[in-house]
Structure formats: C-alpha cells, structure tokens
Length: 353
Ligand code: PEP
Ligand code: MN
Image (tube, rainbow, N blue to C red; front, side, top):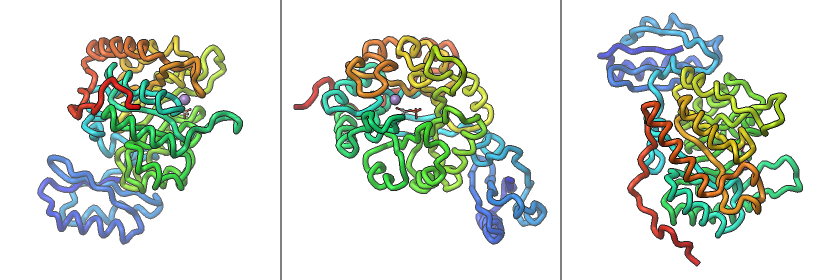
C-alpha cells in the first residue's frame, strides 16, 4: 500500500503517518518526490488496514500496490532509479559496461585484463574472488588474496569493483573491497544473504537464478529493498531451457518486461547466458537494443588458460570491438554509453612490478 501525502503536507504530518505505520508493526519507506512525499507501507498484508490512514492530516490518498513486490515496483516508484557508482550514473540514460575475468587468477592476469577493458571503455571491473562452482574440485577462487588484487586494479585503473558474495559472514570483508556486491544466480533465493546485503546498504548486483521467474527475481530484490537499501541492479544471465546449443537461454524478453515492472536498473550478462564467446557480442547488442541499462561481460587476457569460464570469455580486442558495436546500437535506440568518469587511472597502460 502507498500513502500519497498532499503537496502541502508538513514534515510533522509525514512523521505522524510514519509513526502510525510503525505502531501497526509495519514499515514505512519514504519517497520524497519533487511535488509530494509518498510513503510505501510494507509488512504483513493482514495488518494493513487502509482506512485508518485515510483521514490522517496531510494524507491525500491511499492506494494499494497490486504486485507482490512493492518497493521494487513502478507503481510505487514510477521514475527509473539512478545512483552514482564512483562517478558513473547507473540507471541513467547512459549504458554502463562492467567487464573483467570470471575469476581473479593472478595479479598479472587481472591487471592486464583491467587495463585493457578500461581502455576499451569499461566503467567497472568484475572479477570473482569467491567462486560458486558446480564441482567442489574446481577452482574456488583466490579468496582474500584475490580481493587484494582487485583493490590494486581498482587503484590502478580507477574502476569500481564488482565481486561475488557467497555468504552473510563475508559482508565485513567484502564491503571493504567491493564497490558492488554481486549475488550470483545460485544464491538468488538465499534469503539470509539477501537480508544481510540489504542491511549492509552496499550497492548490489542481483543475478536472476537460472530457474527463477521474473516475479521471483523481483521478490528477491524486494528482500534487499525492504532493509532500505535502494542501490540494487538486476541482472538477466540466462535461464535453463531444453536447448543445449548454448549454456543457457538468454531471456531477452526479461529486459523490456523488467523495465516495465520495476524502476531498478537492468543489466544483461551475455557471457553466462550464451556460454560461448562467439555469441557474446550479438547478444550484447540485442540486450542494448531491448533496453538494458548495462552489460556485464567476461573478458580474459588469455581465455584458453582461464581457470573458469574461458569458453565464454572475450579476448580484450574482441571486447573492444563489442564496445564499438554496442555504442552504435545504443545511439540507434536514442541512448549512449555512460561517460567514463574523470577520475583518471593512476598508471594507465603499465603493470607495476
Ligand atoms: C559469474 O558471474 O561468474 C557467475 C558465477 O555468474 P552466475 O551467478 O550468473 O552463474
Ligand atoms: Mn563466470
């Protein structure tokens, strides 16, 4: 439910409405619009008795939110969310490119790849230090040593870092190193993790599970939002289907569907959704044409030697080619790549020994 305050409602009237909501064991989420304040009321639906709010001073209207996800819905927040990430405006008209290796494997691998993607126009660096692998015998990531390498790459290139979190216990460590916490497909419905990243107030990239509906993805986002953390990006990374020619099936439909249902930025991952580097650029172009706000792409300086996801990783020069194609497509649909922030890399092009 949402309470729409009058345009001339006072701060005291808003505070009184919030107090009434909290007295009912519900929580209040305030959106201060240019003209008026809207209060989202969430909690156990059986406790939400609309009439008691109707006649409070300063209240104009009380409206239901029809979807099961409330704070994520465009009914509650019609304007698309935007938030700054180290000078890059996520969710603005500009398209954001996140690129880097699947896993951080070594200092030279990461730095070489990071410089190359920055040079090609990437805005943020991806790289897993804690990897959720199907087999316990596969490379599990370098852990904290990998985070230190990400911090060095961040310092050297000026790019904010996106890295995966696997459990709530990792919050203190990962929030020290990561600018964005990635919740992977396998953890999309790990509710204690969703609650923990919600409470952390750290930016989050929430990936759709390979077997989740769009509504389930939005409900997962709702967990994070319900703690007041509004800096959430959603990521379509392909879903399971009968098709075996590709690793997953890119649900390109999810892009315009999400843009109509939610105000949260939508990022497409053409790497995991295809599983083959040959198809990555085509699906990246399709995602931007369909309205995605950004891409997350796996790039490796030497894909044949990669410890994870080499088959779907682009070589840096192919990534650069993809960026120019994506730029052209974005302009064709009335958008553009987000400007790369002015914070200049400290040692461009050189890998410190
Ligand atoms: C990844 O980004 O490397 C990853 C493991 O992705 P997903 O969770 O989408 O499989
Ligand atoms: Mn990967």
